[in-house]
Length: 164
Image (cartoon, rainbow, N blue to C red; front, side):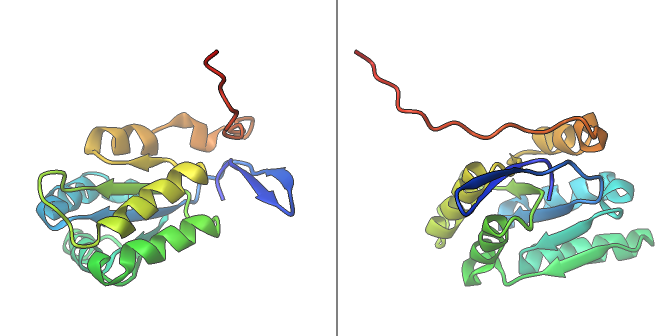
């Protein structure tokens, strides 16, 4: 778990940051090449962490590491349309994912749009950082806060706003 606040039995618990992360990697078909290129660019860094991917994306990522001669821990779920996005969303809810990179094809309709929105929503609700493009992914993985033991992210606030 990274430095998030979770609720268990109506009690807020602070979680400290950690440097060994469990990172979810998801990419739609039209974004898979971009994801593989991003993984190759960041292969040394990513190989130090646990990676969990949707099925087809995970297979491509495993091949990229293999071709580079880099060992990496890559766990593959089902493909996105076959429930992989939902499986990763469930991992987010169970506080098993520290960071998500989801390269979404915004130009084409997806048959599993409900699962996509569920994954994005669960990341937001459970305070899991989620990058939806390469620059935000680069900024998130390079953040010095991952290594800062004094950094403790604060709880999200959902307070009613009265417009009066």
